[in-house]
Amino acid sequence: MKFKKSNTAVETANKKASANKKSLPEKLSKTAVRVSVILNTIAISVISASAEAPEGVDTTEYSKLVDIVFWVATIAIAAAGGIPSLIKIVQGQADEDPRGRNAGIAGLVITGALIGAAAAIKATLF
Image (cartoon, rainbow, N blue to C red; front, side):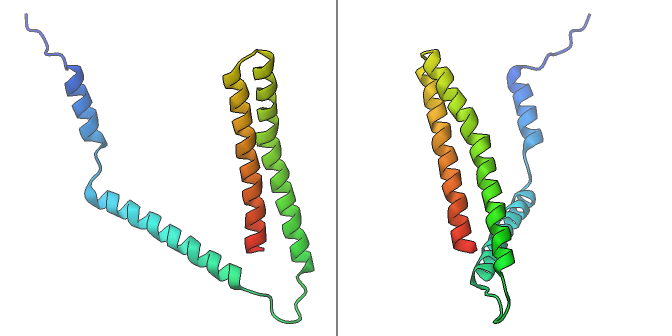
């Protein structure tokens, strides 16, 4: 009776690691794509930030639309981050769980930072 040699944990891990290895050209191409996306984003941001409307063009409707979009985004950020964080704070306080309460406070801080970032983006680009 012959016994089949079983794979040890090390051999199995080595096989998985060798299957997950990517070749150097793949890594370089992904890095090149990421760098080009970042540079294009920066270039488009600079161009759009420095662009001004031609003389005589009324942009009040566009400004109103941008204001509305940013108000909606701010309310969505506040609702998605603030309400669950407040609930977490109240539950943590009721259960006398300082970790839960602190997690809720951290969520509120992050939500506030996101709202501030949205306001900064609006002020910078529009």
